[in-house]
Length: 314
Image 1: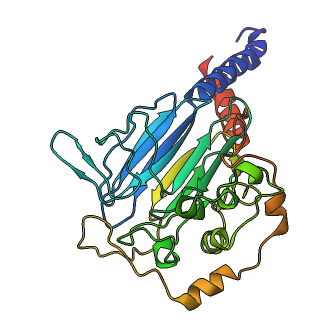
Image 2: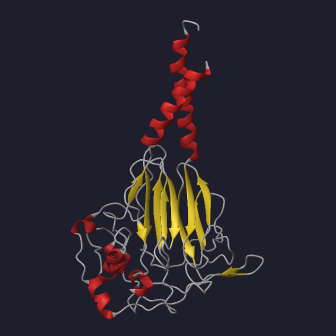
Image 3: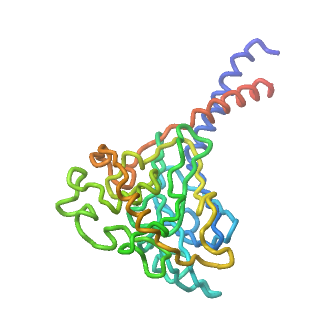
């Protein structure tokens, strides 16, 4: 073996390692949608740039994945009770995007809708959350995998239609409005004189949501326990999670459920509240675009693999 060969190993390993970093930065993250509901869900996607679909059908027990580039920002939700013809024209009972088609084509969800919101970093962190600020229409959780820093998954696995106060309940019982959506008052919507975290406080209604789903946004300034970060991860968005569905398995779409007893609602409304939630300063979407580093666990593994391969190629 030539005497200079030992100088070549580090350079080969470094080149391969840098190539991996570049390719990982370009690839962004994979979003996988999983339907564990006992009925079909029609996910909607709103984001920039478009990642291959703006709406699609996801039957019971099925999954589908999409690749998003670094820097992507947007939201996902699940539509229920949809009726589409052979040409893909139709509407949905909850979270309809108003396009009249399976594809939402740049339109967002009509409240009430459970939302998963993401901003993929360009060199540092991803920011993501599950939001009930626009109300609730079905259970949803987000799980990060393969990255650095993911904690307990955010989301709302509870069936809030069973706990929804009568004044927030949508006719038919298939969804629960936010207080802002139901009443339109500034103190609930966090606008006007209430457009900052000092004046917009959690309400009795947002506390009902927070008690049932402590890792989901319950109102606009509920950042302290509702915004999550991770780097170098892929994400699984699951509808209905692993919780048993409370809707009939014989139905092809969700049906209305009991809004819950007044005793249960009273207990939820009286749950204690963390004072620092009202003083958070970030926005409800998880804040400004950030950059994220590559996941340290992935990088360490690849450094070892690339170095070993470089030793063997000579």
